[in-house]
Each structure stands twice: as structure tokens, then as C-alpha cells.
Length: 353
Ligand code: AMP
Ligand code: MG
Image 1 (cartoon, rainbow, N blue to C red):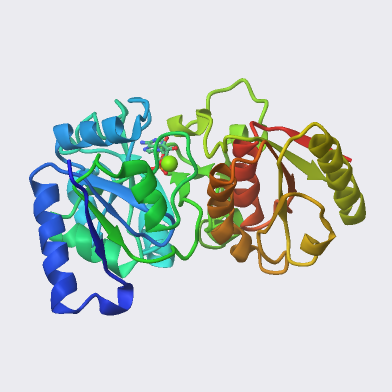
Image 2 (cartoon, rainbow, N blue to C red; image 1 turned 30 degrees about the horizontal axis):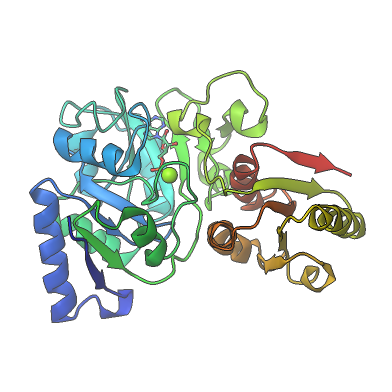
């Protein structure tokens, strides 16, 4: 299959050309095809969420395990009613506060949503993205787009369209390039089906932000404890994710010690002929001796780190580094989401010094 590649930036959305492309994209979706598109979190791989066969193609294109359910993306609030069985007051409160935006809610599903979309569960994950291209695309496509991240299963989520192309070229009908995404980590997932709201995946919308509007919010234990034997409630969270080809180790502790330890390990590895990648931050990057030292961003503004993390992991793959050392991040605010992804990428390999 030949993959059509089109660029639509948010500021050009109203142009005739952009609207014509989105109309074509909508037609592809209605025919049961696949279109990758930008959102504010990461690029999504979209299909009609209400067509079982279209959703099957998502699993096939990604190589995704079939028990890992898809998030259904909507473009306007009213569209939530037909796909849910019950809508708790909390859902309305959250939508008022955070939609459109990087928040996914788990709700009881209606019969309209095929089991293939929800991985056999009787609940459905719903999100309304804030990216204007995404919303327009959803509305042109019939209103319900099932979309996981547009990467091959196990690889870091794409934050640039060229990474979507790398993973999906020839497997899907169209890629819409909207430039680099704003947030860079997937949405926060909150389960509203069992009384007290529970965070199943941390993201840009933090626990503190949710508690401000909902009161007490719990966090799925398996997120906090990497060694937990319990299965996470979001089926996808049990899989190894974001894994770079190289072995990644996180080093945590006081800054000077972290720098010294990473440099010592780097020299050791280099003596063995290995190529070493390092994930540093603004004011430590010049202190490292690795072959490829990447600056993830500023600790004062961890949103910069969220935006760069997946790109850096992919660059290390392209550069064929053998080992990666990364600094650790505070688990406050968006830091919890950053550490959740980084720990997964590292297979939970973290050293405290
Ligand atoms: P992705 O779209 O690749 O960002 O992954 C979607 C995430 O949402 C996965 O971790 C899924 O397990 C989770 N998810 C989707 N639907 C449900 C659901 N009904 N219940 C719990 N988790 C869900
Ligand atoms: Mg994903």
C-alpha cells in the first residue's frame, strides 16, 4: 500500500487545501482505512472506532496485542452519549475542567462500541483532544476515532510525523504531519467506573490537578511500584513500552554524584568498545563524557523534558548506541509521568546512589 503524506499545521487548518485533505482523510476512515494524525500528546493511528474490522487493522499495523484496548477520540461533547451506558457526574466535571485536552476517562460502554475496540472489556476509554487538526479530522470522519499511539508496538510513541513514517510507511493509507507535538507524553487515564476515581496512567494532567476538581483521587498501585505482581488496570500498562534498542539505566541521587557515576560507567563501557548515550539536562549536559550526550531540557520546566524524551530515545536507536544512562526526575507534577515512561523504557532498571 502506498502511504499518502500530507502536512496540515494548526494555523493552516482553514485553508481550502487543508479542508480538502481532511475530507479525503475522513473518507478513508469511513471506508474502514487507517490515518495517522497529530494530537497535542503524541501522534495517533486512527480508525473508525465503531467498525470492528477497521480496529482490527490498527492492531495488525502496530503489531499490538489484541487485549490492549484503544482510546476512542471524540470531537465534541455530545458525542459521548451514544457510546456510554452511564455518565457519572464526575465525567462532566472533568470534561468541564480539562476537555478538550490530554485526559482520557474510562466509562461504561454502550453496545455501539465493538468489543474489538475495547479489547473485550465492557468499559470504554474516551478522550477529546485539543489539537485543532485532530478534532476537525475526527468530526470529518464520523465522530469516533479509535487511536493508539502511531508507533510499532513496543517502540517510543511518535512526537514527529517522520517517526510515524518510519514505523507505518506502507502499512496505512495516510499520514497527516502537524509538526512536533506540544506535550510529548500520552494522556492521563482516569477510571470512573468503580466509585473513587483512579489514575491508571499518569500524564500531563496530574493527580493534584484532578484532585482540585474531584476531591480524593487514587493512583493504580502498579504505577507506583514497578515490581508489583498485580496486573495493572489499564491492560496496556503491563507491556514493555518505549524500549530503545540499547540497555537503559537510570541513575538517581544527588547531582554531583550522579554525574560522577554516569561518567565512570561511561568510561568503563567505552573501554569495552561500547558506544554510550546519556540523557542529561540543561545545566549538567556539559559535564558528561558520553559519545552522544542529549539534553532533555530544563528541570525548572519539566514540560520541556516531557516533549523531548521519546524523540531522544528514538535518536539513540538511529545512532546505534549500545548503552544509555539517564538522570532521574522528581516524581512531582508531570515528573510522575516522565518517570513512569522512563522506568518502562529502562525495564525498571534504576540505581540509587
Ligand atoms: P495508547 O493508545 O497506546 O496510548 O494506549 C491506550 C492505553 O489505554 C492502554 O494502556 C490501554 O490499556 C488503556 N485503556 C484503553 N481502554 C481501556 C479500558 N477500557 N480500561 C482500562 N484501560 C484502558
Ligand atoms: Mg502507545
